[in-house]
Image (cartoon, rainbow, N blue to C red; front, side, top):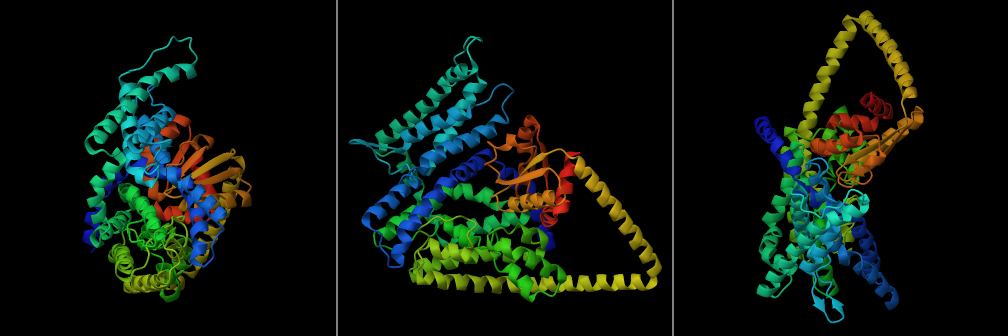
Length: 567
Protein backbone atom coordinates (compact mmCIF):
# COMPACT_ATOMS: atom_id res chain seq x y z
CA UNK A 1 0.00 0.00 0.00
CA UNK A 2 2.82 2.41 0.85
CA UNK A 3 4.32 1.77 -2.58
CA UNK A 4 1.01 2.68 -4.23
CA UNK A 5 0.81 5.85 -2.15
CA UNK A 6 4.35 6.74 -3.20
CA UNK A 7 3.49 6.35 -6.86
CA UNK A 8 0.36 8.46 -6.43
CA UNK A 9 2.34 11.18 -4.67
CA UNK A 10 4.65 11.46 -7.68
CA UNK A 11 1.69 12.72 -9.70
CA UNK A 12 1.00 15.57 -7.29
CA UNK A 13 2.79 18.25 -9.39
CA UNK A 14 0.58 17.36 -12.36
CA UNK A 15 -2.59 17.49 -10.27
CA UNK A 16 -1.56 20.86 -8.86
CA UNK A 17 -0.99 22.16 -12.38
CA UNK A 18 -4.50 21.05 -13.37
CA UNK A 19 -5.99 22.75 -10.32
CA UNK A 20 -4.28 26.02 -11.34
CA UNK A 21 -5.83 26.02 -14.83
CA UNK A 22 -7.11 29.56 -15.32
CA UNK A 23 -10.39 28.46 -16.95
CA UNK A 24 -11.28 26.02 -14.17
CA UNK A 25 -10.28 28.72 -11.68
CA UNK A 26 -12.45 31.31 -13.42
CA UNK A 27 -15.51 29.04 -13.25
CA UNK A 28 -14.85 28.28 -9.59
CA UNK A 29 -14.20 31.90 -8.62
CA UNK A 30 -17.09 33.14 -10.74
CA UNK A 31 -19.49 30.89 -8.84
CA UNK A 32 -17.94 31.86 -5.54
CA UNK A 33 -18.44 35.55 -6.25
CA UNK A 34 -22.05 34.98 -7.28
CA UNK A 35 -22.80 32.73 -4.30
CA UNK A 36 -24.39 35.49 -2.15
CA UNK A 37 -27.14 35.87 -4.75
CA UNK A 38 -27.66 32.09 -4.90
CA UNK A 39 -27.87 31.72 -1.13
CA UNK A 40 -30.09 34.81 -0.86
CA UNK A 41 -32.48 33.25 -3.36
CA UNK A 42 -32.41 29.97 -1.47
CA UNK A 43 -33.66 31.65 1.70
CA UNK A 44 -36.81 32.77 -0.10
CA UNK A 45 -37.40 29.46 -1.83
CA UNK A 46 -37.19 27.71 1.54
CA UNK A 47 -39.63 30.21 3.04
CA UNK A 48 -41.97 29.74 0.08
CA UNK A 49 -41.92 25.96 -0.18
CA UNK A 50 -41.02 24.28 3.12
CA UNK A 51 -44.04 25.54 5.10
CA UNK A 52 -46.27 23.72 2.61
CA UNK A 53 -44.48 20.48 3.50
CA UNK A 54 -45.59 21.02 7.10
CA UNK A 55 -49.20 21.68 6.04
CA UNK A 56 -49.06 25.48 6.22
CA UNK A 57 -50.05 27.56 3.21
CA UNK A 58 -49.03 31.18 2.77
CA UNK A 59 -51.63 33.70 1.60
CA UNK A 60 -51.44 34.00 -2.18
CA UNK A 61 -50.01 37.53 -2.04
CA UNK A 62 -47.19 36.46 0.31
CA UNK A 63 -46.43 33.34 -1.74
CA UNK A 64 -46.29 35.38 -4.96
CA UNK A 65 -43.90 37.87 -3.38
CA UNK A 66 -41.57 35.13 -2.07
CA UNK A 67 -41.41 33.45 -5.47
CA UNK A 68 -40.84 36.83 -7.13
CA UNK A 69 -37.73 37.49 -5.01
CA UNK A 70 -36.45 33.99 -5.84
CA UNK A 71 -37.02 34.42 -9.57
CA UNK A 72 -35.40 37.86 -9.66
CA UNK A 73 -32.22 36.54 -8.01
CA UNK A 74 -31.74 32.87 -8.94
CA UNK A 75 -33.57 33.58 -12.19
CA UNK A 76 -30.69 35.76 -13.44
CA UNK A 77 -27.79 33.80 -11.97
CA UNK A 78 -26.57 32.90 -15.46
CA UNK A 79 -26.22 36.58 -16.27
CA UNK A 80 -24.42 37.22 -12.98
CA UNK A 81 -21.99 34.36 -13.49
CA UNK A 82 -21.18 35.52 -17.02
CA UNK A 83 -19.91 38.74 -15.46
CA UNK A 84 -18.12 37.27 -12.44
CA UNK A 85 -16.43 34.57 -14.53
CA UNK A 86 -15.19 37.17 -17.02
CA UNK A 87 -13.84 39.27 -14.17
CA UNK A 88 -12.04 36.30 -12.58
CA UNK A 89 -10.55 35.17 -15.89
CA UNK A 90 -9.42 38.73 -16.68
CA UNK A 91 -7.56 38.87 -13.36
CA UNK A 92 -5.80 35.58 -14.12
CA UNK A 93 -4.88 36.60 -17.66
CA UNK A 94 -3.57 39.98 -16.51
CA UNK A 95 -0.91 38.25 -14.39
CA UNK A 96 0.71 36.96 -17.58
CA UNK A 97 0.29 40.15 -19.61
CA UNK A 98 3.24 42.48 -20.35
CA UNK A 99 3.60 45.56 -18.19
CA UNK A 100 1.30 48.45 -19.11
CA UNK A 101 -0.88 46.08 -21.13
CA UNK A 102 -3.77 44.80 -19.08
CA UNK A 103 -7.39 43.94 -19.70
CA UNK A 104 -9.99 46.30 -18.25
CA UNK A 105 -11.90 43.71 -16.21
CA UNK A 106 -14.94 45.96 -15.78
CA UNK A 107 -15.28 46.44 -19.52
CA UNK A 108 -14.84 42.69 -20.07
CA UNK A 109 -17.63 42.01 -17.56
CA UNK A 110 -20.02 44.28 -19.46
CA UNK A 111 -19.12 42.72 -22.80
CA UNK A 112 -19.62 39.24 -21.36
CA UNK A 113 -23.09 40.20 -20.10
CA UNK A 114 -24.11 41.49 -23.53
CA UNK A 115 -22.67 38.38 -25.16
CA UNK A 116 -24.54 36.14 -22.74
CA UNK A 117 -27.82 37.90 -23.53
CA UNK A 118 -27.24 37.29 -27.24
CA UNK A 119 -26.46 33.62 -26.71
CA UNK A 120 -29.27 32.86 -24.27
CA UNK A 121 -32.24 35.22 -24.56
CA UNK A 122 -35.00 35.18 -27.16
CA UNK A 123 -37.22 38.12 -28.01
CA UNK A 124 -40.93 37.75 -27.34
CA UNK A 125 -43.87 40.13 -27.60
CA UNK A 126 -43.37 42.94 -25.14
CA UNK A 127 -39.90 41.92 -24.01
CA UNK A 128 -37.72 38.82 -23.93
CA UNK A 129 -37.78 35.31 -22.52
CA UNK A 130 -35.91 34.76 -19.25
CA UNK A 131 -35.92 30.96 -19.46
CA UNK A 132 -32.16 30.71 -20.02
CA UNK A 133 -31.06 33.68 -17.92
CA UNK A 134 -30.92 31.49 -14.82
CA UNK A 135 -29.17 28.20 -14.16
CA UNK A 136 -30.13 26.82 -17.58
CA UNK A 137 -27.87 29.41 -19.19
CA UNK A 138 -24.77 28.74 -17.08
CA UNK A 139 -22.93 26.92 -19.85
CA UNK A 140 -23.54 29.84 -22.19
CA UNK A 141 -22.28 32.22 -19.51
CA UNK A 142 -18.95 30.39 -19.44
CA UNK A 143 -18.69 30.49 -23.23
CA UNK A 144 -19.42 34.20 -23.29
CA UNK A 145 -16.84 34.92 -20.58
CA UNK A 146 -14.12 32.81 -22.20
CA UNK A 147 -14.62 34.32 -25.66
CA UNK A 148 -14.81 37.87 -24.32
CA UNK A 149 -11.61 37.70 -22.28
CA UNK A 150 -9.63 36.07 -25.07
CA UNK A 151 -10.77 38.71 -27.56
CA UNK A 152 -9.78 41.42 -25.10
CA UNK A 153 -6.39 39.77 -24.58
CA UNK A 154 -5.76 39.63 -28.33
CA UNK A 155 -6.74 43.27 -28.86
CA UNK A 156 -4.63 44.48 -25.94
CA UNK A 157 -1.55 42.49 -26.99
CA UNK A 158 -1.85 43.60 -30.62
CA UNK A 159 -2.64 47.16 -29.54
CA UNK A 160 -5.89 47.17 -31.52
CA UNK A 161 -7.44 50.27 -30.03
CA UNK A 162 -8.34 53.90 -30.57
CA UNK A 163 -5.37 56.00 -29.53
CA UNK A 164 -6.14 59.30 -27.89
CA UNK A 165 -3.84 62.33 -27.43
CA UNK A 166 -1.89 62.27 -24.17
CA UNK A 167 -3.77 65.35 -22.99
CA UNK A 168 -7.02 63.35 -22.77
CA UNK A 169 -7.80 62.25 -19.17
CA UNK A 170 -7.05 58.60 -18.41
CA UNK A 171 -10.65 57.61 -17.72
CA UNK A 172 -11.85 58.93 -21.07
CA UNK A 173 -8.86 57.45 -22.87
CA UNK A 174 -9.57 54.01 -21.35
CA UNK A 175 -13.16 54.20 -22.58
CA UNK A 176 -12.00 54.59 -26.18
CA UNK A 177 -9.35 51.88 -25.73
CA UNK A 178 -12.10 49.40 -24.88
CA UNK A 179 -14.33 50.13 -27.86
CA UNK A 180 -12.67 47.69 -30.28
CA UNK A 181 -12.31 44.70 -27.91
CA UNK A 182 -15.87 45.26 -26.65
CA UNK A 183 -17.21 45.44 -30.21
CA UNK A 184 -15.24 42.43 -31.48
CA UNK A 185 -16.19 40.19 -28.57
CA UNK A 186 -19.88 41.04 -28.86
CA UNK A 187 -19.68 40.62 -32.64
CA UNK A 188 -18.30 37.12 -32.10
CA UNK A 189 -21.35 36.27 -30.01
CA UNK A 190 -23.62 37.81 -32.66
CA UNK A 191 -22.14 35.50 -35.28
CA UNK A 192 -22.56 32.44 -33.05
CA UNK A 193 -26.15 33.45 -32.31
CA UNK A 194 -26.98 33.92 -35.99
CA UNK A 195 -25.47 30.59 -37.03
CA UNK A 196 -27.15 28.57 -34.28
CA UNK A 197 -30.58 30.20 -34.59
CA UNK A 198 -30.51 29.91 -38.38
CA UNK A 199 -29.55 26.24 -38.41
CA UNK A 200 -31.27 24.94 -35.26
CA UNK A 201 -33.94 27.60 -34.63
CA UNK A 202 -33.08 27.71 -30.91
CA UNK A 203 -30.79 29.96 -28.84
CA UNK A 204 -27.20 28.84 -28.36
CA UNK A 205 -27.76 28.15 -24.65
CA UNK A 206 -30.53 25.67 -25.42
CA UNK A 207 -28.54 24.03 -28.21
CA UNK A 208 -25.54 23.61 -25.92
CA UNK A 209 -27.61 21.99 -23.17
CA UNK A 210 -29.16 19.56 -25.68
CA UNK A 211 -25.75 18.76 -27.15
CA UNK A 212 -24.28 17.88 -23.77
CA UNK A 213 -27.37 16.22 -22.33
CA UNK A 214 -26.10 12.66 -23.06
CA UNK A 215 -22.96 13.47 -21.08
CA UNK A 216 -25.00 14.89 -18.22
CA UNK A 217 -27.28 11.85 -18.28
CA UNK A 218 -24.26 9.55 -18.03
CA UNK A 219 -22.85 11.63 -15.17
CA UNK A 220 -26.18 11.25 -13.34
CA UNK A 221 -25.81 7.44 -13.36
CA UNK A 222 -24.21 5.26 -10.71
CA UNK A 223 -20.87 5.08 -12.46
CA UNK A 224 -20.82 8.80 -13.19
CA UNK A 225 -21.47 9.98 -9.65
CA UNK A 226 -19.02 7.41 -8.26
CA UNK A 227 -16.26 8.71 -10.53
CA UNK A 228 -17.00 12.36 -9.69
CA UNK A 229 -16.89 12.04 -5.91
CA UNK A 230 -14.23 9.34 -5.98
CA UNK A 231 -11.94 11.69 -7.93
CA UNK A 232 -12.59 14.55 -5.50
CA UNK A 233 -11.45 12.31 -2.65
CA UNK A 234 -8.49 10.98 -4.62
CA UNK A 235 -7.13 14.46 -5.37
CA UNK A 236 -7.56 15.53 -1.74
CA UNK A 237 -5.82 12.38 -0.53
CA UNK A 238 -2.81 13.39 -2.61
CA UNK A 239 -2.93 16.84 -1.00
CA UNK A 240 -4.56 18.79 -3.84
CA UNK A 241 -7.96 20.40 -3.22
CA UNK A 242 -10.15 17.99 -5.19
CA UNK A 243 -13.31 20.09 -5.53
CA UNK A 244 -11.25 22.84 -7.20
CA UNK A 245 -10.51 20.42 -10.05
CA UNK A 246 -13.76 18.47 -10.34
CA UNK A 247 -16.55 20.91 -9.45
CA UNK A 248 -15.96 23.42 -12.29
CA UNK A 249 -16.63 20.62 -14.78
CA UNK A 250 -20.05 19.89 -13.27
CA UNK A 251 -20.89 23.35 -11.88
CA UNK A 252 -23.55 24.11 -14.46
CA UNK A 253 -25.46 20.84 -14.34
CA UNK A 254 -25.58 20.54 -10.53
CA UNK A 255 -27.42 23.88 -10.33
CA UNK A 256 -29.56 23.24 -13.40
CA UNK A 257 -30.78 19.97 -11.87
CA UNK A 258 -31.75 21.67 -8.60
CA UNK A 259 -34.05 24.04 -10.45
CA UNK A 260 -35.36 21.19 -12.63
CA UNK A 261 -36.14 19.17 -9.51
CA UNK A 262 -38.03 22.08 -8.00
CA UNK A 263 -40.13 22.42 -11.15
CA UNK A 264 -40.87 18.69 -11.11
CA UNK A 265 -41.88 18.84 -7.47
CA UNK A 266 -44.14 21.85 -8.01
CA UNK A 267 -45.78 19.98 -10.90
CA UNK A 268 -46.64 17.10 -8.56
CA UNK A 269 -43.89 14.80 -9.87
CA UNK A 270 -40.86 13.27 -8.22
CA UNK A 271 -37.71 15.40 -8.04
CA UNK A 272 -35.59 12.72 -9.70
CA UNK A 273 -32.34 14.38 -10.84
CA UNK A 274 -29.61 13.01 -8.56
CA UNK A 275 -26.58 15.03 -9.73
CA UNK A 276 -27.07 18.21 -7.72
CA UNK A 277 -25.06 20.58 -5.57
CA UNK A 278 -26.69 19.06 -2.48
CA UNK A 279 -25.52 15.57 -3.43
CA UNK A 280 -21.97 16.82 -3.09
CA UNK A 281 -22.33 19.02 -0.03
CA UNK A 282 -24.43 16.71 2.14
CA UNK A 283 -23.89 13.17 0.80
CA UNK A 284 -20.69 12.76 -1.20
CA UNK A 285 -18.75 15.08 1.10
CA UNK A 286 -20.74 14.45 4.26
CA UNK A 287 -18.54 16.10 6.88
CA UNK A 288 -16.03 17.20 4.26
CA UNK A 289 -14.26 15.50 1.36
CA UNK A 290 -13.99 11.77 2.03
CA UNK A 291 -17.34 11.77 3.89
CA UNK A 292 -15.51 12.00 7.22
CA UNK A 293 -18.44 13.01 9.46
CA UNK A 294 -18.22 9.85 11.59
CA UNK A 295 -14.42 9.70 11.90
CA UNK A 296 -13.89 12.20 14.77
CA UNK A 297 -16.57 10.41 16.80
CA UNK A 298 -14.87 7.05 16.19
CA UNK A 299 -11.62 8.59 17.41
CA UNK A 300 -13.22 10.11 20.51
CA UNK A 301 -15.33 7.14 21.58
CA UNK A 302 -13.43 4.07 20.44
CA UNK A 303 -9.77 4.95 19.91
CA UNK A 304 -7.25 4.01 22.61
CA UNK A 305 -4.34 6.11 21.41
CA UNK A 306 -3.91 9.53 22.96
CA UNK A 307 -3.22 11.08 19.57
CA UNK A 308 -6.48 9.99 17.94
CA UNK A 309 -8.57 10.84 21.00
CA UNK A 310 -7.10 14.34 20.96
CA UNK A 311 -7.68 14.69 17.20
CA UNK A 312 -11.30 13.57 17.62
CA UNK A 313 -12.01 16.07 20.39
CA UNK A 314 -10.41 18.91 18.46
CA UNK A 315 -12.03 18.18 15.09
CA UNK A 316 -15.58 16.94 15.69
CA UNK A 317 -17.08 20.44 15.76
CA UNK A 318 -15.48 21.79 12.55
CA UNK A 319 -16.10 18.46 10.78
CA UNK A 320 -19.78 18.70 11.73
CA UNK A 321 -19.83 21.91 9.69
CA UNK A 322 -17.93 20.34 6.74
CA UNK A 323 -14.55 21.85 7.68
CA UNK A 324 -12.45 18.70 7.94
CA UNK A 325 -8.92 20.03 7.40
CA UNK A 326 -8.15 19.75 11.16
CA UNK A 327 -8.93 16.05 10.84
CA UNK A 328 -7.19 15.52 7.49
CA UNK A 329 -3.89 17.04 8.58
CA UNK A 330 -3.85 16.05 12.27
CA UNK A 331 -4.74 12.35 12.13
CA UNK A 332 -3.36 12.53 9.46
CA UNK A 333 -5.57 11.16 6.72
CA UNK A 334 -3.82 12.85 3.77
CA UNK A 335 -1.30 10.41 2.25
CA UNK A 336 -1.88 7.96 5.12
CA UNK A 337 -1.99 4.39 3.69
CA UNK A 338 -4.38 3.28 6.44
CA UNK A 339 -7.11 5.61 5.12
CA UNK A 340 -6.63 5.37 1.35
CA UNK A 341 -9.45 2.84 0.85
CA UNK A 342 -12.15 4.29 3.16
CA UNK A 343 -11.40 7.88 2.13
CA UNK A 344 -12.13 7.05 -1.53
CA UNK A 345 -14.73 4.34 -1.02
CA UNK A 346 -17.06 6.04 1.47
CA UNK A 347 -18.16 8.99 -0.70
CA UNK A 348 -18.65 6.66 -3.67
CA UNK A 349 -20.92 4.37 -1.67
CA UNK A 350 -22.78 7.32 -0.16
CA UNK A 351 -23.80 8.78 -3.52
CA UNK A 352 -24.88 5.34 -4.75
CA UNK A 353 -27.08 4.85 -1.68
CA UNK A 354 -28.63 8.26 -2.27
CA UNK A 355 -29.35 7.40 -5.90
CA UNK A 356 -30.92 4.10 -4.79
CA UNK A 357 -33.25 5.99 -2.43
CA UNK A 358 -34.26 8.32 -5.28
CA UNK A 359 -34.53 5.83 -8.13
CA UNK A 360 -35.90 2.77 -6.33
CA UNK A 361 -37.59 3.98 -3.14
CA UNK A 362 -38.92 7.17 -4.71
CA UNK A 363 -37.45 9.79 -2.37
CA UNK A 364 -37.16 13.31 -3.74
CA UNK A 365 -33.69 14.51 -4.70
CA UNK A 366 -32.35 17.95 -3.77
CA UNK A 367 -34.70 20.81 -4.67
CA UNK A 368 -33.09 23.64 -2.67
CA UNK A 369 -29.60 25.08 -2.36
CA UNK A 370 -28.29 25.51 1.18
CA UNK A 371 -24.93 26.84 2.43
CA UNK A 372 -22.21 24.19 2.14
CA UNK A 373 -21.34 24.58 5.84
CA UNK A 374 -24.82 23.43 6.94
CA UNK A 375 -24.38 20.22 8.99
CA UNK A 376 -24.88 17.39 6.51
CA UNK A 377 -27.86 15.64 8.18
CA UNK A 378 -29.74 18.95 8.39
CA UNK A 379 -28.80 19.93 4.83
CA UNK A 380 -29.92 16.58 3.46
CA UNK A 381 -33.31 16.68 5.19
CA UNK A 382 -34.07 20.31 4.33
CA UNK A 383 -32.64 20.18 0.81
CA UNK A 384 -34.84 17.24 -0.18
CA UNK A 385 -38.03 18.69 1.27
CA UNK A 386 -38.12 17.04 4.72
CA UNK A 387 -39.61 13.79 3.49
CA UNK A 388 -39.74 10.76 5.80
CA UNK A 389 -37.24 8.85 3.69
CA UNK A 390 -34.67 11.61 4.08
CA UNK A 391 -34.50 10.89 7.82
CA UNK A 392 -34.08 7.20 7.11
CA UNK A 393 -31.34 8.01 4.61
CA UNK A 394 -29.42 10.12 7.12
CA UNK A 395 -29.36 7.25 9.61
CA UNK A 396 -28.41 4.79 6.87
CA UNK A 397 -25.48 6.90 5.69
CA UNK A 398 -24.16 7.41 9.22
CA UNK A 399 -24.30 3.66 9.94
CA UNK A 400 -22.71 2.69 6.62
CA UNK A 401 -19.94 5.28 6.91
CA UNK A 402 -19.25 4.13 10.47
CA UNK A 403 -18.93 0.51 9.36
CA UNK A 404 -16.59 1.42 6.50
CA UNK A 405 -14.24 3.61 8.52
CA UNK A 406 -14.25 1.59 11.77
CA UNK A 407 -11.90 -1.29 10.84
CA UNK A 408 -9.34 1.04 9.27
CA UNK A 409 -9.47 3.38 12.26
CA UNK A 410 -8.96 0.41 14.60
CA UNK A 411 -5.91 -0.83 12.70
CA UNK A 412 -4.37 2.64 12.66
CA UNK A 413 -5.25 3.13 16.34
CA UNK A 414 -3.55 -0.16 17.24
CA UNK A 415 -0.38 0.98 15.47
CA UNK A 416 -0.37 4.30 17.31
CA UNK A 417 -0.97 2.60 20.69
CA UNK A 418 2.12 0.44 20.09
CA UNK A 419 4.16 3.52 19.16
CA UNK A 420 2.96 5.42 22.23
CA UNK A 421 3.78 2.44 24.49
CA UNK A 422 7.29 2.20 23.05
CA UNK A 423 7.82 5.92 23.49
CA UNK A 424 6.60 5.71 27.09
CA UNK A 425 9.03 2.88 27.85
CA UNK A 426 11.94 4.83 26.38
CA UNK A 427 11.01 7.92 28.36
CA UNK A 428 10.68 5.90 31.58
CA UNK A 429 14.05 4.26 31.03
CA UNK A 430 15.69 7.61 30.38
CA UNK A 431 14.11 9.07 33.51
CA UNK A 432 15.41 6.19 35.70
CA UNK A 433 18.98 6.22 34.41
CA UNK A 434 19.52 9.95 34.21
CA UNK A 435 17.25 11.72 36.73
CA UNK A 436 19.77 14.40 37.61
CA UNK A 437 20.59 15.17 34.01
CA UNK A 438 16.90 15.22 33.13
CA UNK A 439 16.23 17.72 35.88
CA UNK A 440 19.12 19.88 34.72
CA UNK A 441 17.98 19.75 31.15
CA UNK A 442 14.44 20.54 32.25
CA UNK A 443 15.68 23.55 34.21
CA UNK A 444 17.72 24.79 31.27
CA UNK A 445 14.76 24.28 28.95
CA UNK A 446 12.46 26.19 31.30
CA UNK A 447 14.93 29.05 31.55
CA UNK A 448 15.37 29.10 27.78
CA UNK A 449 11.60 29.03 27.26
CA UNK A 450 11.19 31.97 29.63
CA UNK A 451 13.87 33.91 27.77
CA UNK A 452 12.27 33.09 24.40
CA UNK A 453 8.85 34.17 25.70
CA UNK A 454 10.30 37.45 26.97
CA UNK A 455 12.03 38.04 23.63
CA UNK A 456 8.87 37.19 21.72
CA UNK A 457 6.84 39.62 23.81
CA UNK A 458 9.48 42.28 23.24
CA UNK A 459 9.34 41.77 19.49
CA UNK A 460 5.53 41.71 19.61
CA UNK A 461 5.51 45.11 21.27
CA UNK A 462 7.60 46.51 18.43
CA UNK A 463 5.51 45.15 15.53
CA UNK A 464 3.67 47.67 13.41
CA UNK A 465 -0.12 47.49 12.97
CA UNK A 466 -0.72 44.64 10.52
CA UNK A 467 -3.86 43.53 8.69
CA UNK A 468 -3.75 39.82 7.82
CA UNK A 469 -5.97 38.06 5.27
CA UNK A 470 -6.16 34.25 5.58
CA UNK A 471 -7.35 32.45 2.45
CA UNK A 472 -8.63 28.90 2.02
CA UNK A 473 -10.98 27.22 -0.44
CA UNK A 474 -14.29 28.11 1.20
CA UNK A 475 -13.55 30.54 4.06
CA UNK A 476 -14.10 27.81 6.65
CA UNK A 477 -10.56 26.69 7.46
CA UNK A 478 -9.24 30.23 7.09
CA UNK A 479 -11.63 31.43 9.80
CA UNK A 480 -9.94 29.10 12.30
CA UNK A 481 -6.54 30.77 11.87
CA UNK A 482 -8.05 34.25 11.67
CA UNK A 483 -9.81 33.63 14.98
CA UNK A 484 -6.58 32.36 16.56
CA UNK A 485 -4.72 35.46 15.38
CA UNK A 486 -7.46 37.73 16.72
CA UNK A 487 -7.40 35.97 20.09
CA UNK A 488 -3.61 36.06 20.27
CA UNK A 489 -3.45 39.72 19.29
CA UNK A 490 -5.89 40.65 22.06
CA UNK A 491 -4.22 38.46 24.68
CA UNK A 492 -0.67 39.68 24.02
CA UNK A 493 -1.60 43.25 23.00
CA UNK A 494 -0.15 42.91 19.51
CA UNK A 495 -1.53 45.27 16.80
CA UNK A 496 -2.58 42.48 14.43
CA UNK A 497 -6.05 42.20 12.91
CA UNK A 498 -7.08 39.18 10.87
CA UNK A 499 -9.89 38.30 8.46
CA UNK A 500 -10.83 35.09 6.69
CA UNK A 501 -11.70 34.74 3.01
CA UNK A 502 -12.07 32.27 0.16
CA UNK A 503 -9.50 32.18 -2.60
CA UNK A 504 -11.09 33.72 -5.65
CA UNK A 505 -13.05 36.34 -3.74
CA UNK A 506 -9.93 38.18 -2.63
CA UNK A 507 -9.20 40.25 -5.73
CA UNK A 508 -11.09 43.36 -4.68
CA UNK A 509 -10.05 43.36 -1.01
CA UNK A 510 -6.45 42.20 -1.09
CA UNK A 511 -5.02 45.71 -1.36
CA UNK A 512 -6.48 46.51 2.07
CA UNK A 513 -4.16 44.03 3.81
CA UNK A 514 -0.47 43.92 4.73
CA UNK A 515 -0.11 40.16 4.66
CA UNK A 516 -1.84 37.18 3.03
CA UNK A 517 -1.58 33.65 4.46
CA UNK A 518 -2.59 30.69 2.30
CA UNK A 519 -4.14 27.64 3.97
CA UNK A 520 -2.73 24.27 2.80
CA UNK A 521 -5.55 23.45 0.38
CA UNK A 522 -4.83 26.58 -1.71
CA UNK A 523 -1.05 26.42 -1.38
CA UNK A 524 -0.74 25.38 -5.03
CA UNK A 525 -1.83 28.90 -6.02
CA UNK A 526 1.19 30.47 -4.31
CA UNK A 527 2.97 31.48 -7.53
CA UNK A 528 -0.23 32.95 -9.01
CA UNK A 529 -1.11 35.14 -6.07
CA UNK A 530 2.53 36.09 -5.48
CA UNK A 531 2.47 38.16 -8.65
CA UNK A 532 -0.41 40.17 -7.15
CA UNK A 533 1.08 40.51 -3.68
CA UNK A 534 4.48 41.56 -5.07
CA UNK A 535 2.80 44.20 -7.20
CA UNK A 536 0.90 45.52 -4.19
CA UNK A 537 3.81 45.25 -1.77
CA UNK A 538 2.04 42.67 0.42
CA UNK A 539 3.76 39.89 2.35
CA UNK A 540 2.68 36.39 1.25
CA UNK A 541 3.07 33.18 3.27
CA UNK A 542 1.97 29.60 2.60
CA UNK A 543 1.51 27.05 5.36
CA UNK A 544 1.83 23.26 5.47
CA UNK A 545 -0.90 20.95 6.73
CA UNK A 546 0.24 20.03 10.25
CA UNK A 547 1.82 23.45 10.71
CA UNK A 548 -1.44 25.20 9.83
CA UNK A 549 -3.48 23.12 12.28
CA UNK A 550 -1.00 23.81 15.09
CA UNK A 551 -1.28 27.55 14.40
CA UNK A 552 -5.08 27.44 14.61
CA UNK A 553 -4.85 25.82 18.06
CA UNK A 554 -2.20 28.10 19.57
CA UNK A 555 -2.96 31.86 19.44
CA UNK A 556 0.53 32.72 20.74
CA UNK A 557 2.16 30.57 18.09
CA UNK A 558 -0.07 32.09 15.39
CA UNK A 559 0.94 35.63 16.39
CA UNK A 560 4.62 34.67 16.49
CA UNK A 561 4.29 33.13 13.02
CA UNK A 562 3.02 36.41 11.59
CA UNK A 563 5.76 38.37 13.37
CA UNK A 564 8.44 35.99 12.05
CA UNK A 565 7.10 36.27 8.50
CA UNK A 566 7.16 40.07 8.68
CA UNK A 567 10.79 40.26 9.82
